Amino acid sequence: MRFDTIIRGGTVVTAADTFCCDVGIADGKITALGNDLGTAATIIDATGRLVLPGGIDSHVHFAQPSGDGIVMADGFATGTRSAAFGGNTTVLPFCLQEKGQTLREALKKYHALADGECHVDVSFHLIISDPTEHVLGQELPALVEDGYTSMKVFMTYEGLALSDRELLETMSVARETGAMLMVHAENFDAIKFLTDRLERGGNIAPRFHATSRPIPVEREATHRAISLSELVDVPIMIVHVSNREAMEEIRRAQRRGLKVLGETCPQYLVLTEKDLDQLNMEGAKYVCSPPPRDEASQKACWEGLQQKVFSVFSSDHCPFRYDDPQGKLAPKGRTSFRWVPNGIPGVATRLPILFSEGVVKGRIDLNSFVAFSATNHAKIYGLYPRKGTIAVGSDADVAIWDPERKLTIRHDLIHDGSDYTPYEGIEITGWPVLTMVRGRVVVDDGKLVGAKGHGTYLPRNKPPKNLAV
Image 1 (tube, helix red, strand yellow):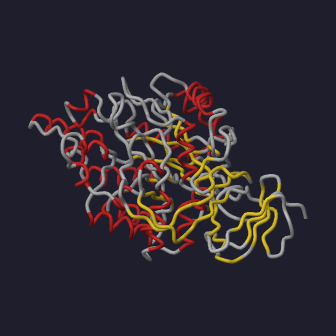
Image 2 (cartoon, one colour; image 1 turned 45 degrees about the vertical axis):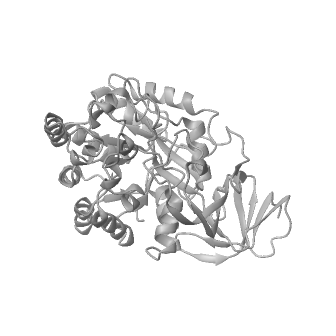
Image 3 (cartoon, one colour; image 1 turned 120 degrees about the vertical axis):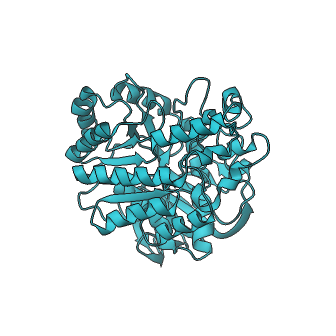
């Protein structure tokens, strides 16, 4: 058998198994697993290292419209580059439909931004902000058939929040088409009420962002989203869950047999609301929604991973520069936390944080790490088994990890378009030392060696009706 590349001597880990073997690759695919595979044009020595499926980050924001005078720090070139440095081989950014815009108009613009720019493979979720009769009755069903098989709805944010009726109508289309529906669950009116009251009291510093979005705001919306999905009988994914109360709403739904999935993120495992309480505007670096909570909430999110209440672990990478009037230090942001650009970078640090804090510290095992980082994303969003596993016939998307490499997270390791990382200074054990996308090495030992444009767009299948992760 002919191979372009053989990865030799490593420990292969999937969501189900751990075994020692070589990996044979030809024409961008894994074509053999075994010992004594012979020779190849390229031999990669993985002795003493882990050979894992490339990470899939199913929750990232690139080049997204962010309001007047605000510019997101990452387009597709820098965002996918950073993803590759973090051991990721596929990312799923959001295509935002703006008010008055058709979904196809939004997609045309988004594809134009991505074409020829990507270092890793990409596929788009659709953000539904204007669920008109035309969008729900014609565009969305057609687009699902074209491979855009997931959509996101918001229960908060001006211009994005949908009414309960609009949520139900969109959920109904998701059910009819078999698409996966993602929900940002926070109560819009409660946040507006708390924000107005805080501002009237002169409480405008970044730390009050967390005060304006307390746990009950997320818990109530999570419960309401689950209740609405139960009415329609549609699977939903509650994204970026930050605390026990919301996690337990999901767990109760699952125990009742409802098709409710959950996601959590690094900021809810290693950051707290205290990070927002820094001098001057430094706290703006940590403004994201939902906000980081407290140590008890961190423990609850780990519990959600350990007990498989959460199916996926994503970054919610939403990057803005800090020292920039078009970023976190926007002039209006100095007048109130309300106007600080909402989101933090994290696509490159997602997996090292989960590996170090989870696997190395004994909170989760290696197979669960692979499931949370890659396999479950592929299954839920219609990419499995092409992506998310190491198996004959799958794309040769591989991340080779040095499980003992120790380093301190610094921004110069991230290679994104932002000028900071909220995880600066965290001590890490375990790091991806090689990232391969469809048989081609993109990052090797901290150096970008793959050309921009190798990453391709991925149409996706619908998730299986009997989805089990």
